[in-house]
Length: 67
Image 1: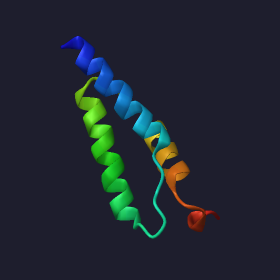
Image 2: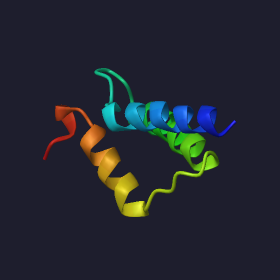
Image 3: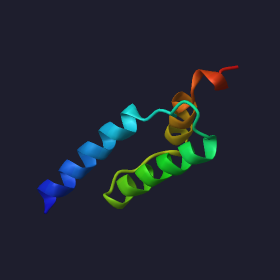
Image 4: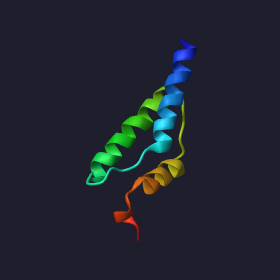
């Protein structure tokens, strides 16, 4: 139903907003998890620009990746 769809979008959007790379986790695993989340949101009708996804990846990295 529409209510369930909105609820799923809300939950996944919150997870997306809070998403961070875990200590000791590889970049490949982090990107895989993020891609799954983004793909689920896209299937529910939420769109992302390439810039938003790149920003999310960069902000999700641990301090080890700071320049």
